[in-house]
Length: 122
Image 1 (spheres, rainbow, N blue to C red):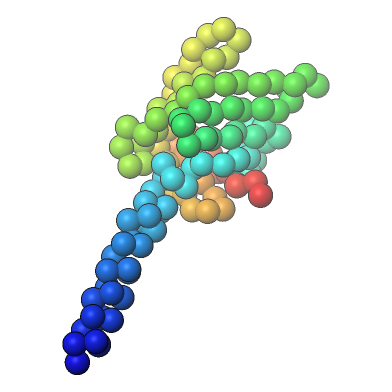
Image 2: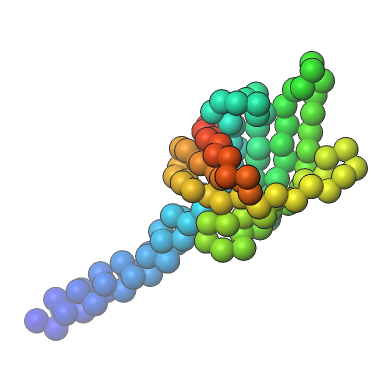
């Protein structure tokens, strides 16, 4: 009887120990890490890469010229993000709401209530 109780306690402990990382992986600030491409619209052809350390790099082509914007991002709440980019010497800050995010798709809403859909690049 005592062995089965010990085994049960061990199983519960291992399960509880594994929960925090699994729960954290469902949060936008964890899911956003990686490369994303707009599904359509003016941004199509660009790629945004979000890193764990709060950096973002956006690359693509505009008028047959390579374009690269670097900046940072931070979450001000679970699903609200502040994005700051250096665009040709000018700092631009935009607040975005992460309306939906999972391992394959992301939907953002900007301060003008414009929705944009992204697909994760593999």
